[in-house]
Amino acid sequence: MTTTDLHRLTGAYALHALSDTETAAFERHLAGCEACAQEAAELSATAARLGLAVTVPPPGALREQVLRRIGSVRQQPPDGAGPARPGRAPLRGRMLSRWALAACLAGAAAFGGTAVWQHQRAEDADRQARRAEQATDEIAAVLAAPDARTRAAAFGDGSTGTVVVSRSRDEAVFVVAGMPHPARGKVYQLWFDDDGAMRSAGLMDPGRTDQAVLLRGGIDGASGVGVTVEPAGGSAQPTSAPLALLTFPA
Image (cartoon, rainbow, N blue to C red):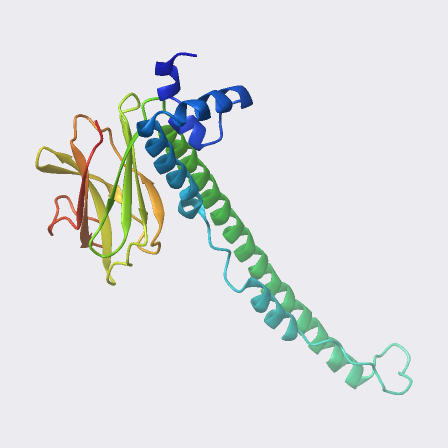
């Protein structure tokens, strides 16, 4: 394995995607290559944060709702009436039977609605999981690209950001840690910096302070990535000065 080959293994090393032999060779190389050591450390930190980008909150208080519905269905009490006349049920028994039937019907309707609601929530969770898995795969592919390069910066609010760029894939990933939540009705929007002209690269999740985002669209010669605060839903062009602007690594 040549030195050039070893330089290209930083992303795969960060994702633990090397064989034992490759790992041993690369770690020997790290001892004498400061650039690879720094890049591998940055990519490892980025990979460690990927889980934050794909966590899916569990459904709401499903158990409590089901238990409340169970409590609303009354059971039929024992029938204490005397012997019934032939061919005719006691009046109290008939009334209790009607109440029990009504309760059963109400319970069936309630649980039917609950079953539909549970099915819809399960389908929603499944779709979210598939999207999260696809996003993770796309982000991991950029990190593991042979030409993946990183650049990190600390922002004025105490948060930190890292951009990972793969020129061969024409893709970039932006990772942020400790970013404050935007104001209500606002969202952080990412932008490619095309020599001063800003091109939308997607929205960040306003509910997360730590996240990894695959920039939407090709790098296409952009020199960096910027972050602005925009109205919910994003803007066609920035409406505020960038909170942060990172130059892409060479």
